[in-house]
Image 1 (cartoon, rainbow, N blue to C red):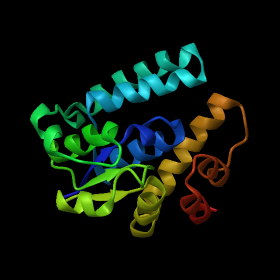
Image 2: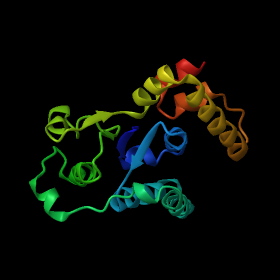
Image 3: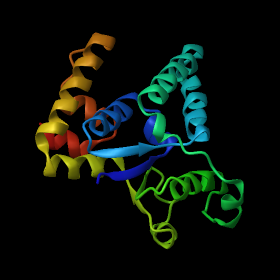
Image 4: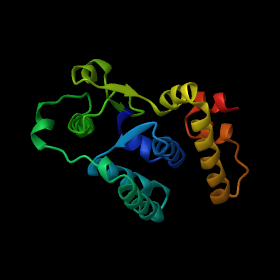
Length: 181
């Protein structure tokens, strides 16, 4: 049975990172999970790229909800009250992972998700680069195909001549970028 991974907003907002993760999830590598609040954080973060950023994010969120209807976790308020994390604004992420019976939380925020706290809840913390690199070691063909697809889409949308290595390195996935070189 594939891992169940709660995706934090910080791994959903960068487009290339999200496309890589959702691409390999679509190939059955893992089951993605998120909460409405996580999706809302993504939409609000996308405003940084301009007024159209939020609109694009909301359209992509609607598409994700159609493709992955079972991925969205509805939280129980009482659960959040018993949990602790260094940043109280991240407690909802931990609560969603617990509620969704996740195996892992994927985030870039190491300091806000201490391993010992997660272990107490039966969870691990993983980062996108490390997780995708481990998937590549186990099944290089799948990860390479998704990387090729994401790179082709980046070329179409940007008009730039991206390589998988360059694109993934820019997207903060240097180990995977080096592996695919």
